[in-house]
Each structure stands twice: as structure tokens, then as C-alpha cells.
Image (cartoon, rainbow, N blue to C red; front, side, top):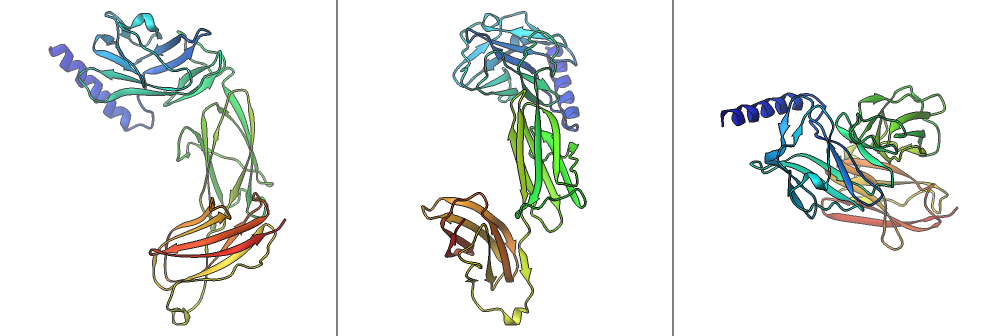
Length: 332
């Protein structure tokens, strides 16, 4: 009993230590299916030994305990159906896997399993998993046949390159706030990186532009080309508040009809939360140009519709429960 308490205390102290570090504690080291849709799971715990008698696995459809005597440690323990006391199915078209200690109500580790191609595994690197075209179940994970290339350009809405000067750009794997790696951008606004095959996120900061976040779902041994379009911030047309109208107004866009780029103005008689959106003639949301708090004043927005087909569109501004909408005509 004392040994169990001491061991639980060790795990708790170790977990607290890890939480202070950006690396998250993970146990699932690698996962794959063989050609018969039979699964193999690799477990590893480097700091010490964990007997699995009091642990179980849970998928979207099944729960199963481990057979007695299995120990997870720094070695690469391979778990299969034969390692469990009851049937445990994992859907090859996508599933969710959890490792749970019996007296705890939460998962110690989890794994979102996507559809895996034949001969492909989901492998652990630091605190995230990546796709690998050459599994190493039972051996240390490697990055052979597990990398992708991403080539991109950073431009404004008119297609002009945004250069490195005054631009802060970062990228990272499996993170929505990727400040792990500085992104180098040349004088033409171009960049190229080699990354592990996972969700690769980019973030761009530049004065007078809206922060841009972009994500690529990367596959191994593949090259991706992306365009990162930074949108200028909403500009405030300086005007004395004494000259502002006493009501919420939306002006006509100009030019109209337009070819790719048009401007429109709106006036706020009071501070508030604003949402500016573009819809097509079927009512489908095409783009949200701005959402956030704005003070009293007159504002001008630019919509660059280079990716949209010719046709009739509606631009809409919503403020304090009021909605104003007008139409514009795109001709290419």
C-alpha cells in the first residue's frame, strides 16, 4: 500500500515538473496497423517503471485491461490484442485511444488516430505525433520517410510580396501559437521549410496588418505550396466626432462594379463589437473581414476577391444587434 502511495506521489510530482516545461508527458510512442488491419501499439515511459496491471485502454467503442505482468519503462513495449484480457477494436478509418489508470477518472495519455495508409505509422516526437512511412515498432522512432517540404509566399491582398523587414513570422508542429521556429522570408516574400508530417502551423505579425494564422495538414514525402495573404488592418478615416452622424451607417462600395478589389465605409455612432462579413448570392459566408471591438468613428475596409468568381455579393456590418447589408458586383 505504501509503495502504491509513493509511486502515485512520484507520478504526480513528475507531472507537475513537466507542466512547467513545454514538453507534455506522453506514453504512446508509436501506433500502426499491419496489412490485416491488426493494430500494434508501442508504449514507453523513460523516467521509471510502470506495471500496467492497474491500467486499461479505451477506444471509441471498446475498453480492455492489460494482462498481468506487463511493465512500461524506457524500453519500447509493443502492445497487441494478445496483450489484453478482452477484445479491443480500433477503427482503421479513424479512432481515439486513451491510456487510463483505474482509480483515476481522466486519461493519462490520448491519441487521435487518423486514417493510416498501409505501411504508415503515427510516431511520437517531443509532445506531438507525426506520420511516418517507415514504422519502427519496438525500436526508437526515427524521422526517415517522415518529412515534408512546405514552400510559401507572403503577400498583401494585392499580391505584393511582404518582406522580412518589420515582419515577425514563426512556424511549429501541432501548435496553434507557433513561436518555436523563426521563419526566414527572402526579399521576394518567399520561404521554404522541412517539417515532420503533422499539422504545421504558421503565424505572421506585421504592423498595420491583421495577424495571420495558417495551417497545413502535411503528409510524409510530399511538397506543399501555400500562399499566405496578409490583410491590412481596418483603417480609421479621421473625422471629428462632432461631424459624425447620430446613427449607424453603411456606405456604398467603390468602385462598383469592381475587378478583384473594392472599398466600403461604415460609421459607428458609439463604441461596440463589430463583425464585417461577405456573403454570396446564395447566402453562403465567403469571408469574415473583421470581428472585434471598435470605437466611435468612420472606418474603411478593403475586400480583395481574387479567389472568388464573378457575380453578385453582399457585404454586411453587424453592430449592437443591428445589421446593415448592401450589394456589390464582381466582374473579372
